[in-house]
Length: 70
Image (cartoon, rainbow, N blue to C red; front, top):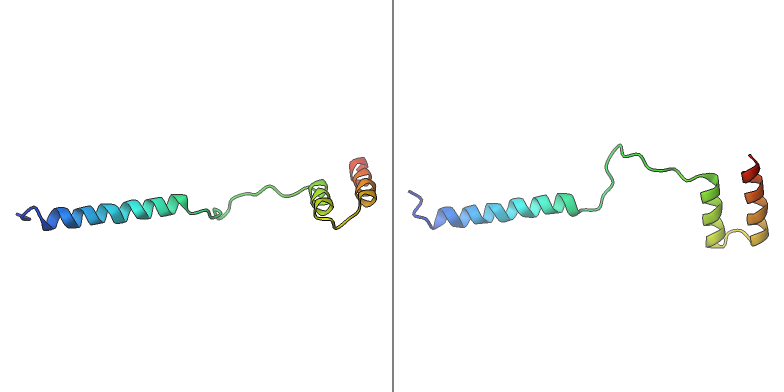
């Protein structure tokens, strides 16, 4: 019916296309719409600022003390 050549050749190409599409969907690193992300706490933000050098050690300790008392 299909002469066993054209059918299997095209059939094989479609399998490759579908597998490639499925792999691309699952392996692409993107965020899911509506996904809830953990928001940084004020202490997390303070730690990041200290690590990046925006604030000094003294400023970090002062602000950390203020945040921990609240």
